[in-house]
Structures are given as structure tokens and as C-alpha cells.
Image 1: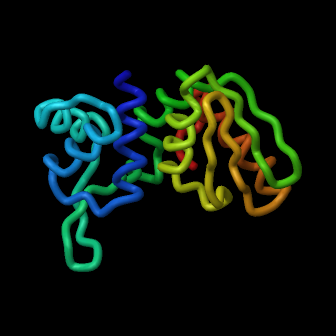
Image 2: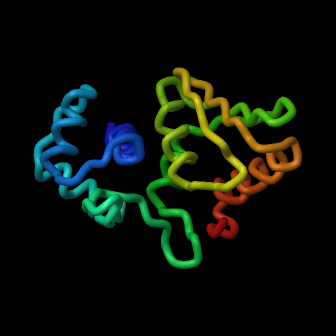
Image 3: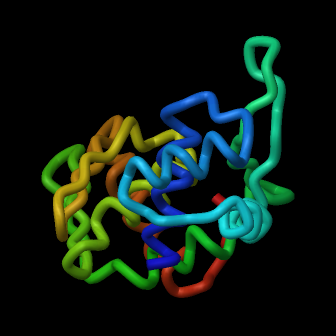
Length: 154
């Protein structure tokens, strides 16, 4: 449940200009996650979210670690849900544990890999639109390295 909630937080702050913990808690509750402000505060700390000025307003953002390192939480989400991957030209298809596709898609989106245009998630499958066939091969290799613990920077 925590991994799904963390993935939902990443998705929400990417979709909306969330300025306060209360607003984030409200959005999570609307999405079916029963949380308190204390839980949201802990999640923000664990995900290492930060507030940044965007269009003159402060909002929560995902900031990669030094050198573009992937956060341990995103790697954890990928490892928890990942089963397999394959490609069809420039579409990367990621199979996940049932119910984890949205969390895996949110983690992939949060990585902000330039090769990935966007992800669509079902229940156990993620489709990633990748810029080219060559980029799909590169993303598969990056994902393999991330899952194996090799070279966490992208």
C-alpha cells in the first residue's frame, strides 16, 4: 500500500501544482488513499520531495539526486512491481505484478528519462512510448541496470 501511495503522490505532483501538505492529503483521499497530514509529511520526507517556484508559486517537485541519481524509492517501486519487458519498435511493454502497473508507470515517469515520451498503465502492463527504436533498446538497458543495482545514474 505504501508503494502504491508513493507512486500516486509522484503522479499527483506531476499532474497538479500542489502547494501544501493539506492539498496533497486531500488529493490522496479523493484517490482512495485514507491518509493524515502526518502520513503525507512522512511520505514527502521519504520521497525527498522539495518545493520549487514554478510560475511564481511554490509547489512540490521530484528532484533527482546528485548526478541525476534515481531515488531509492523509485528503484524500490520498479523492483517491487517489475516482471518482464519487451519492445515493439518504439513501444516498450513492461509486465508487472497485478495491480502495480500504475505505480511502475509513475516511477518511470518520475525518472524523466529523455527517451521516454510518456507511459500508459493498465492493471499489470505499462506501455511506454519511446522516441525511437534505438531509444527503446537504450531504455531497456537503463531499466536492466536500475533493477540490478548497477549504475544508478541515468
